[in-house]
Amino acid sequence: MLPWSIDWAGRLEQKTYDSALLRGNPLGDPHERPVLVYLPPGYDESEQRYPVVYVTMGYTGHLGMFFNRVAFRQPYPELLDAMFAVGDVPPAIVVFVDTWTRLGGSQSLDSPGAGQYLSYVCDEIVPWVDASYRTIADRDHRAMTGKSSGGYTAMVMPLMRPDVFGALATHAGDASFELSYRSDFPRIARILRDKYDSDIQNFLKDAAGRAGRLQNEDIELYEIYGVSSAFSAEPDGTVLLPFDDLGEVIPEVWERWLALDPVEMLKQPQYADAARSMRAIWIDAGRSDEYYLDLGATAFHRGLQAIGVPEEKVYFELFDGKHGGIEYRYPMAVRWLSERLQ
Image (tube, rainbow, N blue to C red):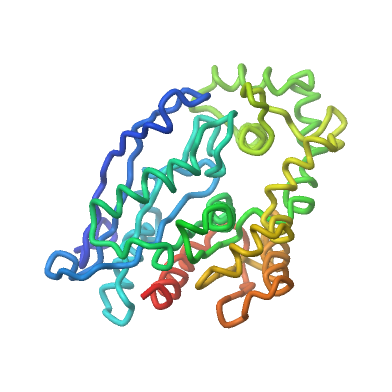
């Protein structure tokens, strides 16, 4: 009974996956990971096979947060259940995957600084889901979706692994790094200078002793280090920040970041081919996004147009809103994807 709970039309299973790829990861994070699997109404009464939509979370997000209940909102899995319960949406299985690290996230990439999270999703979780549930087990019936850093994953994972994913939906995903990341570097450099002698390792030691008492500024520092661990870690795991003590970019490190910018990736032939192979691409963002990810979304859309992705495959919208509070749009994208993955 709302607001405390719902009577499910489908059902939600929580499983634990023991990952071989995440064992011994550089950050010492758990190799056993929770996986949430939403099964639509009618799953138990039929022999039907279903397309699958995979969901990843934004930076600092982990799977337990999908159960959070806040005033006047329902958690994402409940919104999905309400959508599928009406019966006017082609059913799909929805899988929520966890690529959290103790730094707050991994960008779901393979990195010597964080671990093999892209391979974990593509080469462990996807085959496990296909073996455990009645899926349509091919790339043309799989999609990736997410918001913010999860939206970044939704863009780059299908570009990197088009053999696994054939569609995507990105909500305010990290893109156009010159706008969304670079503008923060001078401010972060000042914080490091004034509090930590321009050494982020000093911050990490200090923050480790303040568990449960972190401020927004701390989260920003964790994020810049965590994203650096994904984008610009050396083979031995050493994490390189993309800027110096003055906040100016270090060109050879910044180039490594730009090589992983979804907008820049579309200019590379292999990623352009992958984008053209997608069955469906949803892109949206709030017009007032604080991180300029509305501009990144627009640039990604224009990049798709430039490489010849047909407009009938793409849904693009800038809506009135900021970076937060757009959870109501998640089921809209899943509905759109479900209709195209049948």
